Amino acid sequence: MEQNITEQNMPEQEKAKTLAPVFGAERPKRFAGGMRGRGRRGFGPDSNKKSEYEQSVLDIARVARVTKGGKRFSFRATVVIGNGKSKVGVGIAQGRDVAQSIQKAFNDAKKHLITVEITQDGTIAHQVEAKYASVKVLLKPARGGVKAGGAVRMVAKLAGITSLTGKLLRRTNNKLNIARATLEALKKIKTRINTNHPGK
Image (cartoon, rainbow, N blue to C red; front, side):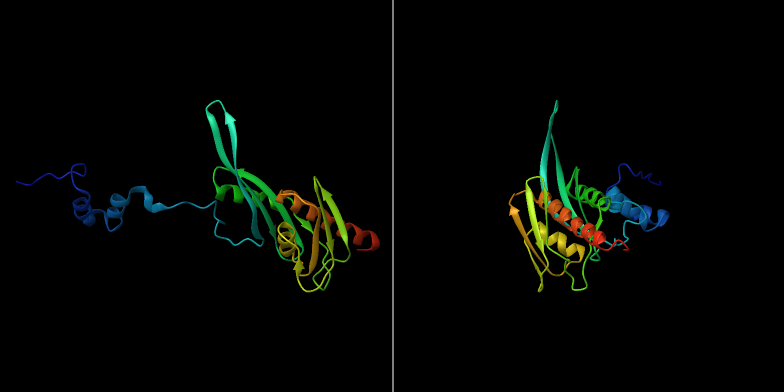
């Protein structure tokens, strides 16, 4: 008498062996691993495409929002991006996890890109200083590398500046404000050059 075998009461290994001739080699993998073998999907057809901008994470902080149901935790990322050819920007965003917050901050930085005037020597044309919130930064032309710390160095290198001296005239622990003060200083260089040379 032929025995009737069903998928529900059959062990996993026996199920794979029995159903392999019917469904092919891929059927046992689905039974053994379920949906786990599919992995995470990207953000679209261009998810594997390399971006023209390099990015550097300036700061990641865990933040909380108090609601009726309790505290909701998320992550806030501050990212600096640049193409190494005079374009640089700073973005900030929140997400449910670190990867999502970095991706959203990257997209925010792309919306706030500026173009920096860089000399042939890879430095800035003149000394400039700027203030943003409680931060005051001073930038000077130099030779022999970027002599600055933290956020100032990161912004300068991603912009493509190879030689620079940077100094904080008013210090703070807020890296975002330091980066934005540096951007404000770099904007002044562009404005001053365009003023001296209206034909450009």
